[in-house]
Image (cartoon, rainbow, N blue to C red; front, side):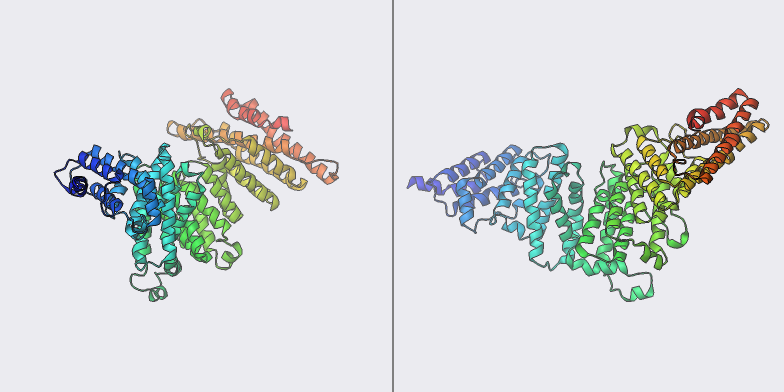
Length: 626
């Protein structure tokens, strides 16, 4: 009888404020292990006791070391074989709701309890009965989901071994979250929508765009489902449609609106803008908002299958979030980007979004032309912004240009000269670029040249290339030199394109080169050498002028050399007319280019000789080509 009285007093001792916590833990372990302890519903009682202790650790003033021991005790009883059998056979076992806030707080990389808390979370999520209170309360599920998203991201970034437990936890909870949305209609769907973007979206995008999650495709798929259910659920379908298609500035559009109809989506877009700016101010290595916009766009299209106009409207909204805002159609020029535009992080996102624009037929040339080219004008202004505002060439920039070319080559044709400038000018940092920089640049230039070969308009492409060399204030690299870099890939593709041209067009291009060298450089060099020495205040501009002609001559001559060594002019099928044209062009080139330079050499000072003739002969090597 005495033994039974002592065991019956265990419950009172566990609740007694005067009993030391170490003694309570010993009693709890004894009660759990002892077969002589006949506490009614013992397992649930001890589970409730430890959950209550952890939930009220601040109130009870429990020391950190004891808290750690409590987490260990909770893990031990949850992981106990007898407990698992009880859970499987009984649907009445449950976890107190009060534990979840503490559990969420412990699921931090810097928490000293994170290992035990993660293990406990894994066991709870595996059990249908224990996790009932979790899946039954939307707010509790969101809190825990947010904590796990943050934890997994940190673990992956730091290669923390906790990821082996945390990632399975997250996958199970994501599955429960999406199932709960599919199986029921949330009465407060507006509240659920707000909670989804305010509390879950940013940590979800941070994990999705984390480089280390690249090989975990299933996890990425579950995050896409989370965005689908939380942000683009079917309850919001009609609201999104009206939001993107109604012109709220028109009287007709205002008549169709209900008061506050678009408040939720307006707040969502504003939230993304603020978070993007906040991440920029923190100087984050990866801005999860900007990096995550492509998956938002892709999920939006998959969820609602909207019309092309709605997709285009959403594209403009996302560009606005990135800080890329082309001017209105009537302005005729691209607007300046706002200070918040972070081009280094915006360009990779825009690259992926533009690919979705192309693959989803959002811009159809014939349809847009019939409607007055509104989309063409917007894309053109976007292209102008990229060329004038991007800090420096990058793989993403060339991939964007490549997609513009795929959409409509006329977009590129409008800006061919600056595109040549961006594509061929080198920077000292180019040696340290990402591995795919040269690949992207060569792929774009190759497609560009091949397009104009097929159009039989290669002369138009070449005119813009030569014009890019002949500028009073050409683009320069950080050393002040305006250099063109023909890598092996470009040289190979250029040569291929030249060889594919018909002989007649090849001779036209030869004449184009010859005339450009004469009119843009040799004549100007001759005029410059005959001028009187400039006055002091004009010497600086004269020196700049001289430098630009020298650099342009070197570039034009080098390209002419590449053309001549690649051209296919005379073969066995050549007619007498073609032979005569070729011979005439050779004579004109000899007389108007080579002899003219020879005359300049005879009459020029050593300084002029070194500047002009050496640049032409050494860089262009046109004499060798002829």
